[in-house]
Length: 314
Length: 163
Image (cartoon, rainbow over all chains, first blue to last red; front, side, top):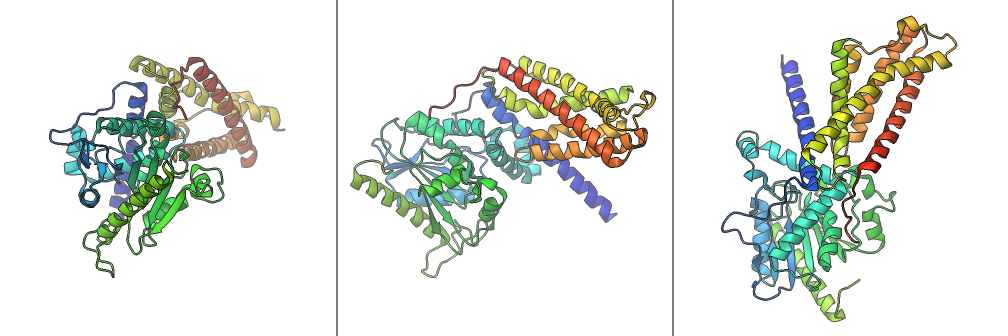
């Protein structure tokens, strides 16, 4: 009896998984075919950017690309803590957190009637949908289209927030978990639309390493020995293996574009995650504090180096 | 061919066509819904026909290469049981793992066909499997060549981003 119930459960789950996987590509199709334009409208009271005074150019624009929990324009609980912390401690940055990394049409899942019903009844499906979107973004057949869609979405958000092409103001793509797949994929489109100095910071980045990040000046990889989810990404995607010398990731590594910063003993998720406010380090700081400090230090160091050399670094 | 098998093969063709459609449609800028439906139906008929030809081709290959040539009276044909798994051909569209899952599905169906051919033709399983594989690969390559040609003739490439 239990065996039959388990079989039915697994069968049902398998069917849901297949249906979701097949439907996951539909949004890319709609975007590319032009059946529906990407949305740029958002709820009243949601600002296009936060942080630095909008009446003068900030030192840098920071785009936060959240993990698979992202399903609204406004911040998720955990990602929101990091964004708020960054805004509080680095007032020179203009921060955009409303990008929808898992929606080529920039439509939050929570705003779709069917998904709103699912969220109330089977919330797990929202996470599954976003996981599938990461796989769509990583798939050789759909990757260029997905990258173009999300790159264009970020470029639009930056323009609306006051960014001027060729202004030379750096843009930092800070991505958490699966957001790294989207961030690395957006590089070419952002470069072609805005010619922006582009820096990437991945926090527990889960990505396939296939995207070409030639137009990014540098990628800072924040990782931890306790982060098994990021490690799984380095195992399951062949382009992350050293053997695939010509993958985008390995080329960037050979060019010295990737720097690793360890945030041990943080985990990917949970009460000891990179952005956990309760977990404490020996020096008394929380994991959230340390991650915030690290991100801000990397940006400020890069900014000062750029200022010293009076131009973008190679 | 029984009506049940004909319907199954048409559904399998539709499933296969749906699995292959997005990468094609994605290269058509401003494609209409009607055109997508047209492509889907055309693909369903072509892929369904290719599936229908698979056992016949395997039978023909067996007649050509095996010393004990099978008689034409008991030709290898689809049965509902053999054809049913093909309905899942749309799994090709599954992100990242799609091509692998599709290959596994085709190998599974091919194994079923090989068993049926071995029984009907009175040959060894491995010889039958070889005939089924040659027929399957031949049909696959042919239809892929036609597919690429059609795409090439019909595609208006969306402008690539300037590097």
